[in-house]
Image (tube, rainbow, N blue to C red; front, side, top):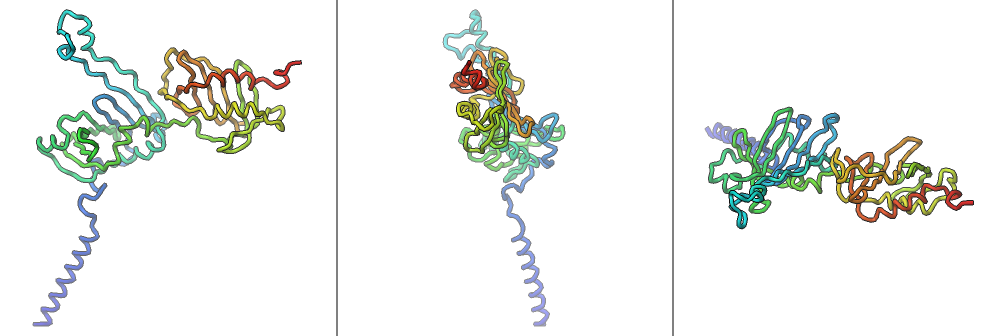
Length: 348
């Protein structure tokens, strides 16, 4: 009898140990990333759109190359001001009051190249995972977490299907980002690091590089202005300025051209215009152009042009024109000296 009891107790103890081991091995409930909100592979994801009451941002794949991402930045129409909300305004009689109650059309959205941060962020939305699932909440709970009147939305297009979500308002600060799935009212708690990049897309997700190559990647430079071009051999590596020597005198580096090109190379965009967007005042007039080559093949180019509101530039990598800061006038004035051979410049 004792032997039988001992055997039974031993078996129960073994079962308990196995059960304890399995529980210990199981991921804890509510662990970050363990709740699936949308179950689809990242390759099926076509577009992610974030919006609030005033603006929107879209991160989407290129129609011709699905590995290439674009960022679309835009504003919503401003809400009209009711006549009764204006000082001294009336609902009739004053044509100015009626005009003020009409929403002002926003500028067209801009489409810009997405950077490496965007390339890493995009696949994190498919499959979309959350920290916790809170189920379907009642009206009081929805109000408590900021989901009742929020105008913040997240929309995802996956394989042609649209999934829409409401994001909690930020009235109480960032805190915890709650998300409500519109298809079934299910509420989730997202991780804190997923949405800030979308909210600050203009500074975090836009590619601001002028070129994908650097000093040392090209061995020749062709500088053109006013129908005149001059070629230079190039040598050197970053971070030092590239040394340039006229093609006709490769053993005589041109210090003036080196300094001029170094200032051109260091130009930084002040503002990026969108794809197919023209500067105010129309197409700017080309001032000078710099072409970069390696082994006789073109790597890229920089075109600097003057418009009614200043200087603009575009390269092989930019989405379109970029606005340049002040200080480009000296470069435009000195390019004539750069493109003129020394013998011609010195005269007979």
